[in-house]
Length: 348
Ligand code: PHE
Image 1 (cartoon, helix red, strand yellow):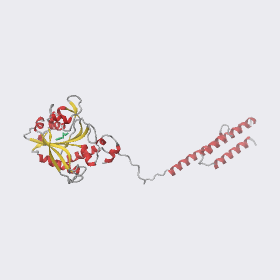
Image 2 (cartoon, rainbow, N blue to C red):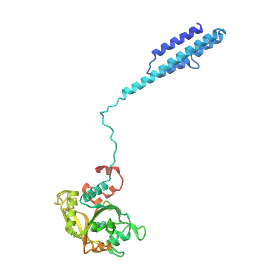
Image 3 (cartoon, rainbow, N blue to C red):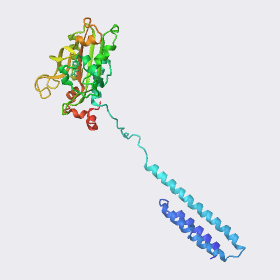
Image 4 (cartoon, rainbow, N blue to C red):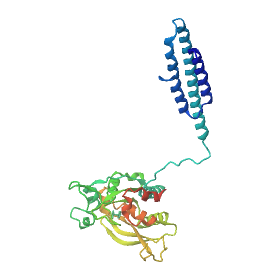
């Protein structure tokens, strides 16, 4: 066989093989390419015979060799391109999108149950014309105690020991200092002062299921002309109904706070048993929810408010206590541990 015949035969057989090659198996085509066009392939093998050709024949055959190489290279390239196309077509066929399938839900967080409780209470008070005021967690002894009628040597300070930054600066033990700060600012020619102030407070306490060295309160304060105990009772009655149900009643018991006179402890009728007595109300039918009272005249006077002309009521409630009662939470530590499983129970 002449070189020319060999080349023609190689071209023919390779193209034939390519035609029959399984396009799904790109490896088969790659192997064939190496076999034919590779360094040690059939073409190279045939070219070894070139050296036996005459000087006239060589350029003619050389040209033919190039032509065969080009034709085959192109044929392999085409085959590869076809394989790629086929691959993509197959992928597209198997990856059809069903737009009617439900989408993957995006994981959305939720507000902390205490935030929810505070915001719910704020909403109720905003609806009654109260303003929401922020206070300082790091507070002066002066506002936390002295302005609340607890001078330096007052025995009632013992009930609210706290963390001291300096002798005069401490972590506030209640939200009540916000009362003094707000009264100092209020212009009574614009009408009565009605405010609530939610926030974190601190006490020296041993943490257990019902005690925490930091917790949250909401302070309430109304000061104006002719503000009476009846206004306090009416306001708290409404709050109790909104938070614990329309049928709730409240009960006031005498108590003591240095900054209110008279002072009361407020109970709400049990929302679980309705007053019959059960495990939630410890068989009494009543649940203690907050402390309150009429603002002590000295507290008004310290803000420069004429206690003959103006009077007021104040109350302070614990956010944790309200949330624990409403949701049946029996360990206060759950609020602070940052366990998402705790929070997820109160999606709202
Ligand atoms: N500040 C009181 C406490 O933390 C609660 C309170 C507020 C009582 C306002 C009366 C009036 O115990």
